[in-house]
Length: 141
Image (cartoon, rainbow, N blue to C red; front, side, top):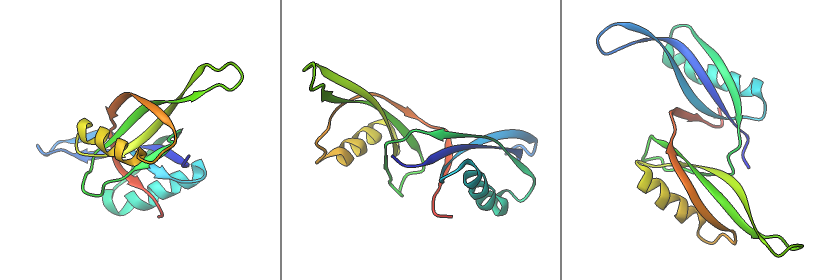
């Protein structure tokens, strides 16, 4: 499992019609601590936003796998149940898991997830694919 945080940044954005509107945008950050996630977010956004902004919220994300595609700018969460057998009772056990997939649409996200899982010894069932609102993913900054 990767150490990922979702940071929400609040700032004044000039809209296409010229009006200024207060917006909140979500970013995904690869970091070890909350402080590091905040620092990476500030470092990456300061030159892009130019003006004042606030890191309004930070939360830890429980993402088990990440499947990237640099040709896409959308992120999808793929919720699965990992299926195993309980050795004591012999019953099937389902463990929820969450993956993050970079893809153009939900169909592409499903395909990319399945490609990424090829060769895995784990049985799984996909229970949901949802588009996220992440603007960017900050790693190694």
